[in-house]
Image 1 (tube, rainbow, N blue to C red):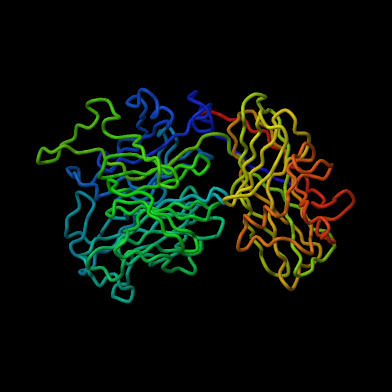
Image 2: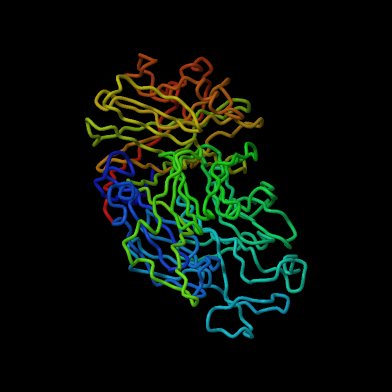
Length: 585
C-alpha cells in the first residue's frame, strides 16, 4: 500500500547560487501595520546592487486603526504566514480576524471573522471598531497575535487573542470573575477556516504574544508578555497541540517580554522576540541554556527561521527594519528599511503633521524549491516483537534527473512513523535528513549531528540505494504483538533541483542490543555505523544494503519485516514514486 500527495512551488529568480538564492528564489513576506500592507521581496534581490527595486506590494487595502496613528500599537495587519504548498498567504488583522489570499494577492477571503462581544462595565475604556459609538454594546477586536500552519495535517492554528482593552490590573484577568474571562483563546481550524475548535480558553493573563508549533514533539508555544499591574510576570507558555497540559514553560520576569515564537524542531531550540527588551533569545525545549542572541534592536516582533541556511529573520516594528542574522545571533544585517524603497513611498502624515514611518510587524518566508508530501504504509509480519529489543526503522531512496556538475541537496523533513498496537497509538518523530549529491565526492558517507542525518555521495558514481533517514525505537517492556497493520512512514521532501525524480521505501529490523538515542541522539546514532549507500560507501566496501547498522549486525533478531533477502534492514515496503515538476506561481 502506498500513497503520495505533492504540490510543488518553485520561484525562478536566476540570482546567485544555492537553494533560496539560485534557480529558486527565497521570498520574504512582511506586514506593515501603519500603512496596511503585505509586501514581499526576493532575498537575493535585497542583497544585490539595487535593493530599492525589489519590493512588491501584495495587498495595500488593509485596515489601519486609527488612521492617524504613528505608533504601531494597533497592529493591523498583524501576523503573517505563507503556505507555499497550497499557494496562500494567511494573516490576522487587529480588528477583523483571520484572512487569506493567493500569493499574488488577487483572491482574498476572511476565514475567521471577529465575533461581536457584549461590553461589560469592567472593560473600560474599551476599544471599538472605527465608526462605532463608545456606548456600543458590541466590541469588535480580535488582536489575534499568532498564526501557524501544520502543513502535514493541513491545519491552521491561531491565537492567543485579546478581544478587549482593559485598564491595568483589571479583575477581568481572573477567569472566575463575572463575566468569565473571555480572552486568550488559541484555536485551530481547517485551512479554509472551517471546523474551528477552541483548544484553550484562557491561554494568557496579560497581553497576547505569538504562536509557534513543534510538530515533532506535539507541542505549541506562545508568548505571555505583561506589564505593570498585571498579576503575573512575563512568561513563555507551552501546551500540547490539542490544548492539554498547558503551563508556564519559562519565567522571564525582568528578562524579556516574549512576543513571537519560532521552533527549530530538529535542533530542539525555541526562538522568541522580546519587543520592549529589544532582544531575541533562544532556549532548549527542555528549558535549559537560555541564551541572549541579539540586543539593542528596534522593538522586534515577528520572527521566522530558515534552518537549512542557518538564518533567522525578524521584523523591527519601531525601528522600521526587516532584518536577519545567523541562528547563533551573529552576522546581523538589515534587509529592508525606508531607505530600501523609492522616494515618495512613505507619504502619510498624522493629524499633527508628523511623518508616519515604515512599521513591519509580521514576517514569513517562502523558501521556494520543490515540496513533496509523501507517505507509505506497510504491515509487520507474524513475528511478535519482544520487549527490550530495538526496532531500527530505516528508509532509502534513489534519485534521477540530477545535474552532473552542480551540487544538489535533498531534504527529508517532518517525518513520522505511526502505528497502533495493543490498543496504544504510537507517533514517532524521525530525525530530519539532508542528502548532498556532490560532483567532488569520491565515495559516500553518513553522519548524524544537530538531530539531522547528513549523507554525502558522488553525483556520478553512486549506484542503487541511498540511505534516507532512520529511527531507533526501544520496544516497551511488554513488547509488541505480531501482524501490526498499517504502519505508516510520512514526511516532506524538499529539493533545490527542478525535474528531480525520487523513488523511496522503508524497512524495519529488530536488534537485541542497539544504542538508545535518549538522551544523546548524536552519540547513539553515530555509534551505529550506518551504511550510506549500497555501493561506493567510504567505510564499508561490501554489498550490504543502505541503512545497515554495520556496528550492530551481530545483534539482529527475528523482526517485524523479516524475510529472505531482508538482511539487516528488514524487507522493504512498496516504493513511492515521485516525479515533481516545479512551477512558477
